[in-house]
Image 1 (tube, rainbow, N blue to C red):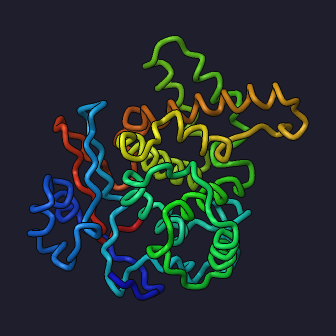
Image 2 (cartoon, rainbow, N blue to C red):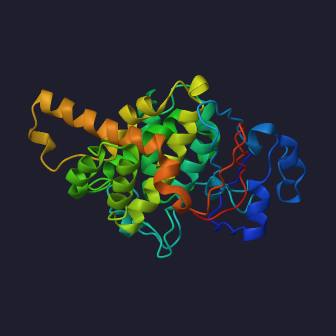
Image 3 (cartoon, helix red, strand yellow):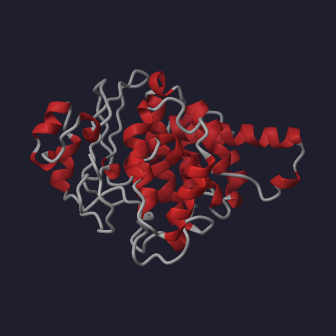
Length: 303
């Protein structure tokens, strides 16, 4: 499917349509549904992920976007956004109505659809020239055919974006509180404490955190294919999400200890994202007792 770059804003599914999409349990259901009639290939419909570790299932309607000429993975910045994408506070580049920048929406959507079936996603390196060119293109606000790019490249650039956020996504000001929450003896107490710390994040940070952790969760649930469980993902992504103000002055051993603490935190957030974020995951998540993962399609949905 050839995608034509466009800056048109995506439409928003109404509640009834969203619920119908969530209820799609098989590829046949999705193909037959009139909302998804435009899909012609299996790859553009969804990625099948068998969940073996849990019976709880999370669907990602907030990552759905319909692949059409008027709403594609162009990667173009929203027209009103005049600043660069990287190295900016999230409050500057996020929309007034709690919307993430369009390129980040699109990258997360592609990683949601293709990440679970991509071996070594977030671990394998990308071509350095392609990485630099993509970042420059996104910073300039130009149209980029993100859907046609390697998944590993998009994963690397997302890590770069997270690393570039001033004070980091999880806010270095909350470092001690994150660590204190992890020290709770009972798992339910840790979950409750982490919820309270997360609520202290700036709204744009919490919004992006929910999306990022949800995508990492989906990838980890298909670790037999992706070769990336929650621990692997936390090692690769965690250092880009949190640090300490004075980490540049740390010794090697101290830095190693810091990385281990951050890895433990991010791994716990991934493994327990349903319990920690629950109904607060954007655009409502559907949890069932079925052993099979509900399909994520690419219908038009705002973040």
